[in-house]
Each structure stands twice: as C-alpha cells, then as structure tokens.
Image (tube, rainbow, N blue to C red; front, side, top):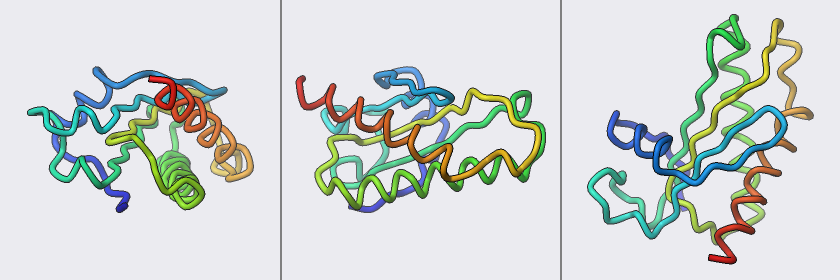
Length: 130
C-alpha cells in the first residue's frame, strides 16, 4: 500500500464532507473507507492506495514553520501506523489540527503522534464493526 497526497478539489471536498468523523484531543480526522472507491469523487487508485491530507488553520497556528511541522509529523505518524497495521480499510484520511500553537517548539512528535494513533485506532474499531 502506498501513502499518497490527496489532490484535486473534488476529492478533498468529498474527504472532508463525506468522511466519517473521529476526534482526539487536538485533532479531527475524516475517514472514507474503500467501499467508496468507485464513486465519481474518489481518487484514482482508491482500491489499493491510502490518500492523506492535513489542514492546519493559520488562525490557530500563525507561523508557517509550525504549520508545516505539524503536517510533517501527522504524515509520519500515519506512515508508522500503516507499518504496524498492513490491512487498513481506509481510502482517504483528512486531518484538521484544532489546537493553537505560538512557537515551533510546541509542535513535537511526542505530543502529536499519540493523538494521530488514537484517532486511527478509533476509526479501525469503527470500521471493523461495520
């Protein structure tokens, strides 16, 4: 399974609007499972690849260096989760960071990675039941 960036306005909008919502402390995650892979707003390769997008609001995190760091940590956390769980039923994952940060030093892997893993575990449990 490849982890790729979600591109295209139609696919990004569908990921945020039609995805099942999960939350952790500072993070909201919208997930669409692979059953939606054949739809018109699904990305090409949705049957085998995982598409990820991260959004960090400028109002919450004013410095670009901090926003980019948060996005990098989130993407790396998804990669580490996928390494532990090879069978993931998700097609797209859209993250929205909700917690304000003033300095780049506040964006640490130790703080962000457990929140990403917690939200992904919630989604795995939900989709294993349905």
